[in-house]
Each structure stands twice: as C-alpha cells, then as structure tokens.
Length: 394
Image (cartoon, rainbow, N blue to C red):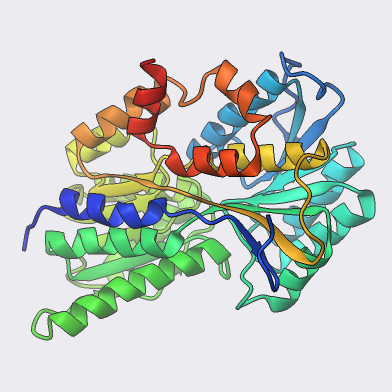
C-alpha cells in the first residue's frame, strides 16, 4: 500500500496555488489584550495608523508566527498594531472588535471562529468607521447568506485572505490512505468553525473517493471529537479516539493553532504509541523536524503564517484609501497556498527559508504596502520555498 506519498502531496498541492481576485455578491469587483504595539518604523504616511489584530492566540505555535510577521510589517510600514487574544470563544471574538475599535484602531484583521460572529464584527466596524478583513477565514455565501449580505452592504468590510481548505483536507487524508491507514480518528477544535467545516469536507471527499474505487479495501473516519484550543483537551481527545476505536491506525488533528496537536502527540508518546499511529495535521510545529524523525508526526500542512500579513495589507490600503471595493460587492479575496511536508528533508528547506530566516525582508515588506491589489494577490499566491530562494538569491 505504500506509494510515493510525497509525490502525491506535491501533485495535489498544485491545486492549492490557484488564486482568485475579488468576489462580488452578484458581480465580481476589481479575552483581554495581549501583545502590544509595534515600534514606528520606516514607512511613510502611516505613522498615525493603528491596526488591531483579533486572534485566537498570539502566543501558541501558529499565533506567535503570525504575530512575528505582522509586527515586522508594521515596523516596516510605520504602523502601530494592537492584539487581542479571544480563544475562538464567540463572545470574546465579538468583544475583541469592540475593544479594538474603542482603542482607536482604524483597521482590524480578524481570525473569527464562526461566520455568525462576523455580523456583529462588521456592524461594530461600520458604526465606528473602521475597516475589517478576515484572515484564515472567509464568510460562506452558501451557508451564511445573511452574514455574507452584511459584508457586501458594508464599505468597511474589506475582504478575506484564506486557504483552499477543502484541498488541504483532501490532500492530508490521501497521504494517510496511500500510506495504508484505514481506521482514522478525527480531532477538531470548535463546533461550527467555518475552516474546520471546509477541511472536514475535504477529509470526507477523500474517504468517499477511496471507498468507491476500492470496494474490498474500505477506509473509515470517525465523527469529530472536539478539543477546543488547549493541549490538555487535545490529549484527552486523542486518547478518547484511540480507546474508542479498536485498530485505529491514524489521527487527523484538524488544527486549533498547534496546542491540541502538541497535547495529542504527547499523549501518544506517553502511551508508547509514537510511530504506531500516523498523525497528520495543519499548522507546523516548532519541533516538526524532530517529530517527523521520531514518527510523532507523519505529515503536516502549514507554512501559512503569512496569511494575516496579506490581510494586514488589505486593511492598511483600505485605511489609506488605495483599495475601495465596489458598492454591494463582497470585497477583495486572496487564496493563500499551503506547503506540505512528510519527511525531515522536506521540513529542512522550509525551516531554512521560513523559520531561521523570514520569507520577506524589511525592504520587501515596506514596498508591498504600495502594491496594487493584483500585485499583492500575485505575491501571496506565489509564496513558496522556491519563491523565497529566487527573491533572496538576487
């Protein structure tokens, strides 16, 4: 059953790099605060701008990576940034927007949990004349038509930067199936989270296609067990799935910023299950290279911490009057690519160009503030290890 799953991941990843421009409603159009403010930098004409960041956590693995690159961009463009960690708790998500508006932010980027939270967020921003864009998220026109309409009707809703989550989920499950895994446990984070719903769609699509093509070699996937965003709950969810599903040979940790995954693989290590359960997830861990070597992780998608960077530029340009969406349209949309790794060698290249060094220099970050939307969209969708090597070798 073992095929070249690295090759499969590379082939499927090609579908992720597709990008879209702007999506219209009818017609397309061209807890407490944490962190703090960045130092004013070399940007021109932006020194009086403050942008708020509403994020699940600015201190876990993925959140800290997001904060680092946004802080660097803020310094390069002379903008102040303020963070509020909201833990993907709906009441805290909506309160974070109110808090950032009250703090004098002229723009906000937000990683919300559910589409429903965006009605309050958009209305609050509209009332205060504050621009807002989503990162890692987009409002579903199909599943949340009224929320989508609210976004269309507000000139202050700028748009969204997000990933092709269906393809992401589809790719990860196919990596497991090609490895030979057939009894797959599913660990999610928050009930109703829009991003998880899309990843789950991809997981299910992969299972259904496999079973249709292999009637004598069926695969199963459990219903999701929810772990919220803590390592303790992740550990409990992982063990519950293992104990409830005899013969389970793989675990999908759908996300949650990294902490649930840390708890899950730690729990399996404590039980002597490392390498016996193939674990895949989204959001690169700090020690992913070691986990790939030990068998703690089988494969992971990630490298998308620059997603909020591009939401930052959407909002900054809206505040400066450079990006103005057509009345009644959804706004600007960027589809950001995932990277997939399934070996220490895969991760070594990522670590060299994205972790030990930043994918963008200060000069590049300052220049991106003046990009047209088409230029910004191209920069986002082209981001890859090869892209960084090409840019930084000149």
